[in-house]
Image 1 (tube, rainbow, N blue to C red):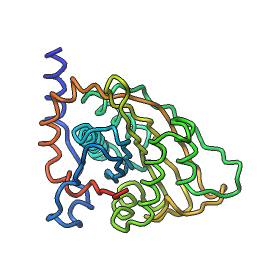
Image 2: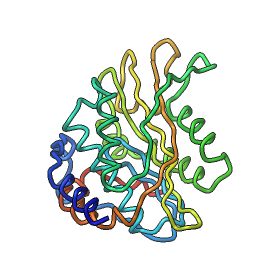
Image 3: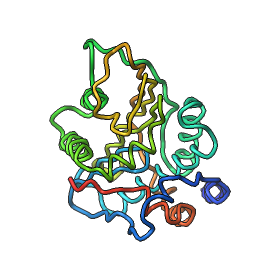
Length: 252
């Protein structure tokens, strides 16, 4: 309804966003990462890793990247991403819901590894494989995103500095595809953890089981394009230069 749209536009306009330190330290001459039709893509989006199947259009890719960036930057301003994670995720999902994402509140539970040590990148692939199916084209895009993150010093710096502190991490994995009715679907994994030490390369570091407490939530959600398309310009305006500095194409 028009009232819902007006309320969403007002909500976005009044949001306060963090001023990220990464934003100031990275080159202001960067252009926004290009999104294109007809090919799979993988990108770092602040503290999230986003993967797209080839059937997601450039416009829909931008909508996912910008709406989830808005939610992160607003949640970062409202709550400490690392020390107040529960409230951070509540606010993050609230912002997502207001701009058109259809999702439930997250239930986090602790990951219990059967191995004595593990990498977070491996856990992530396990969780997503259960959600998406190991053979799906989208899973291939996720694997390529993670592989290329490991090779990208700029990607690692952006992702690591946005999603980790000295002893904590809080990141999201956002693989997107489009269903038969042309609706964007996301197999979402949200995670946070505490560890004896956390480096910016934490995603590929091997942790022994006793040195880390890892919590995860997985869920599928969808984007209501009818609503989002009517707040899109307000979101873009609110984000400003952050779309240039907070998103990095991993060239998968």
